[in-house]
Image (cartoon, rainbow, N blue to C red; front, top):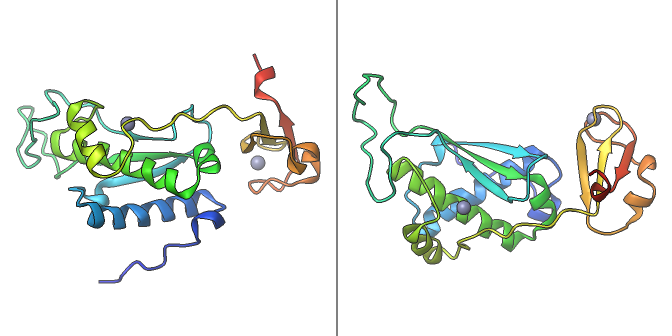
Length: 200
Ligand SMILES: [Zn+2]
Ligand SMILES: [Zn+2]
């Protein structure tokens, strides 16, 4: 079996969504063995969200009937409606680019471990929450019970071609002062800078 030792750049050198996913997935694979998570990473999909709210990351799961934390689920069992399931259903680890931009490596890996507890609960029970079992588990893997919400950036830079938000800055810097001199990585177009506080 091919070993995946090509985990991409160092944390501080991550520049693209693909690199952030590769790095985070490789970290989670290490964390699963280091901390003994009972998680099937092959059943986890990954995405990077650029427009997400203030949450640093989130696990998106299907909503299952009759699932509750504390009641292990037998994924091989055929549900009463007869639709066969193929083992553990997949869930999606959604990473916030803005949070990554703001967090250092330690806070990012704590965030990933917090989300791994959610994945572990979902894969075990079919649902997940922030209840007492979650708190105990989070403590045992050095993860925060609540991931820090991050503050709104002072400046948002977006691509003048496709309109996507491409960067966030928390203080005035060269990129903010001379945004039109920079080019977006998506379209190679000039950037435009706005202050989100002025949007509403
Ligand atoms: Zn959570
Ligand atoms: Zn663009």
